[in-house]
Length: 367
Image (cartoon, rainbow, N blue to C red; front, side, top):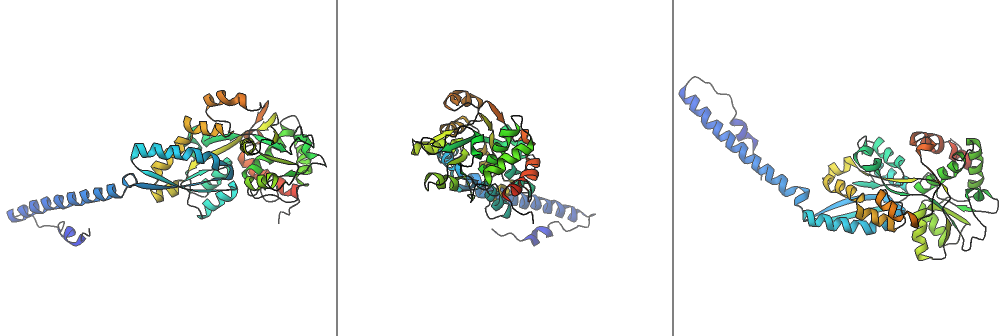
């Protein structure tokens, strides 16, 4: 419905007061003004209500995540969709994208993927999106556990029967052992692997120089780095490459269900792999999906969702579920975190920046 502004403006033309006629004219015009404004307000409200997200029969939600979360999302999302349908009489259609965490974050920053929600491999990636202005500062404080919604630790996968007799992180530096790895420049698990190897030395009394020498011996034997965790897993399990694969414990558990002869060990000195979730503020405001996006993030912390994470080998962030499931998982005696290694700003600068520790290890020029 189009309403011309000219007649409305004419209602508010100045009057010369001082006569009864003018006074009565003012009253008439005032009445008409309020009548018209009230009508317009009602029309605007009706328009907003009819066009709002909640009144539409369906709503689309864009979820951008790292590769290994797909199996968990496959189980969790239908539960959320059903819950939302019952509570709001509305169908949620998820548009999902999976890939290397760093590359996914880059696509969100560049606008190639207009994510409403991101569930990424490490807090550093969400912080980069926030630094680009897409997520409000303090995103960690808006959700439980500083945004960490799924957790795991690192696992070492060997060939059937463990022919190289791999028993610890230290064995990965042996000359006769070839490790498959993803690239820390594009993959979240690769960063966690790098930090796990480094921390296995520094968190047990070793010096940074010793850690650097140890990690260098491992990475210099890797001819080609995979793009992400899924590609590295496929190369190891499907193509038979390498002697050892370092990956998420939950990824190994999932693989073992398809290949029961999978051999793996969880080193007792290990890193807490913390995967964050966040609402992408700029995009949800653009799409009008804030309510459903925030509800989905909240649901990921719920008991039904955390149960699904636990079933797939994640270490739940729900302490009650952790107590119930920890007996099924190998114990970790020394569990360190990214904060124990200096925190993400330092890790980003000292390990991952151009010309920093990883580039030096791989022999890449800083230029």
